[in-house]
Length: 344
Image 1 (cartoon, rainbow, N blue to C red):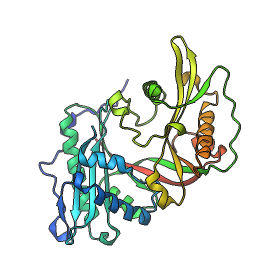
Image 2 (spheres, rainbow, N blue to C red; image 1 turned 30 degrees about the vertical axis):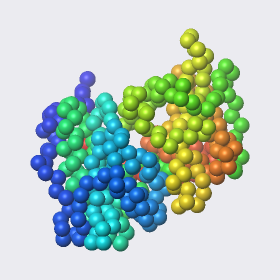
Image 3 (cartoon, rainbow, N blue to C red; image 1 turned 90 degrees about the horizontal axis):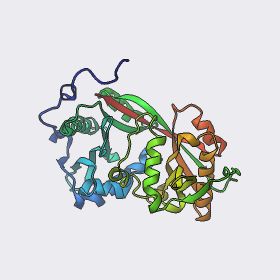
């Protein structure tokens, strides 16, 4: 049986540069690494850019702050570009999810003040990110497949061209969908013997294990250990996150879940309040019983009870029939995020 494992060791495939060059002085900015004292400036820059970029999803301030000030297990490096007036005008991050098992992954993200775009800063930052990603991947020491990835909104044509020119290829499309909570929610019966409950801390590890089983065959998915799982949902809303329990030999077992977050930082620019379902999964031996519909109906009702206006999620467009499933529940397409990658 043929193997997907690359023929050459990772150390040879990475082509690690000795130095990650920061953007040149002629671009008009001075550069240094970011730290905890820069969090407010970073959030202000992101706030200025998200309106111009018409981004559906805003980066989580809690997660950004944790990466910048080093309070997360995620391996992160960052670079800030400061104008003559001392204001932060550009930033870039490279981060590696902790505890990857089957593949080593590095993700890059960058933001440039709208007034400073079109000067070549984006390409210079991407060169630095590519170099730092390769350096950080090399420090892991394991000989595994590797990936450098970046998520780009489909509406950002210039940014998509930039990644293609740098050697990235579109790998996956994640369709963003939302529905007004005020619309009627379909009546979805819960199969006999099962219970629908809110997520709670005592259920969390069982939800993690169910996630690992449910996503085992999904493209790009990696199993979570307790440490990596603990940082996945920094803005989790327990009352909006639902779990299906089934009787088992040792008591109730988690067989399905929907994890929904409260990204309140994005509501002002969205113009409405919203719950965002980050993950939904059903254990293989309970599929085909309508549990995903049960979960989402429960999420929507919980949002309505709290006066929230919208329910949103993202769908992998490669999964056959997935978008039709969500459309039947009233979700409508709003845009898409494209994952661009360099496979190493």
